[in-house]
View 1 (spheres, rainbow, N blue to C red):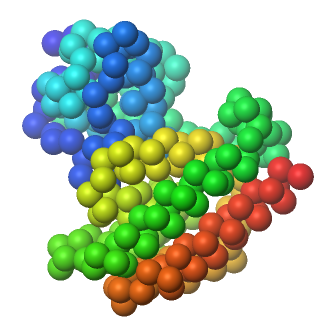
View 2: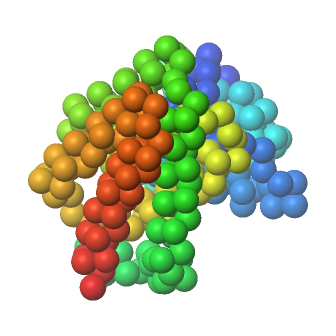
Length: 252
């Protein structure tokens, strides 16, 4: 076994909604770089949360469409950068150790500068994707299994402690895209959420805002269950307007 410690444990790929979008095949021309990017996305989106183990090397390499050598090199790079650690033994593997930086306006501005400084573009893409997903679900309706999944994601956000709120909130939002059945939509929202989370992670968590967001999450789900596309559109728009206003205020 390679010294990365990924190994061939019996883990399957995570069942989180973003897993398919994050662990999608990489392009052959930039296999190493894109593998690193996919693994970082899984870490920062919470598909593999802090303290959790990455899936078995064989499964992960197959899903990404890369050789196990390329996967090991990517994991070794992340280990050297402090994002993961390898543990040996029966319960060993590669575990996430990443801790987000402390919130600060300076950090948020650096992230925004790295993104090209275009908040309007990010917000427009996010609105188009999330509003579109919610409207489509309201038009189609949910199967019992889909309703149960969405209920579970909503309950997880409701019960989240502050330190784990961002991850579970991300999973809830990505679930809406996943339930549409469109891989392209899920992938696009995953990419947009990666950029957004870079900014949100640099902003302090406000408990009152989390309570407000929770009520808005319920309004979105209620509209979808009621089969009311217009109510779904309004609920998602209201929710996104709130987070946009907070980010603009924090970055001002």
